[in-house]
Image (tube, rainbow, N blue to C red):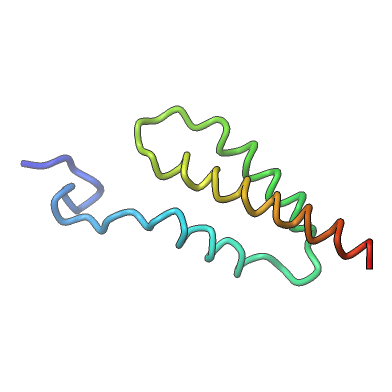
Length: 81
């Protein structure tokens, strides 16, 4: 018998989404006009607390860090124009 996850066993449970899929879903869920830089920083802080063995949250944090850098660059370049 596998690990029980609700009514499913670990063998029949759906696989976790890839970090890239999570990031895209998160971006699409952000309301218009929201402060993406602040939201990204909040997610990075939240993911900082993850101490588990699964690599997904750490990869997701890396993606949020990359997004934060891109937002900072686009914000700076937008002010220069």
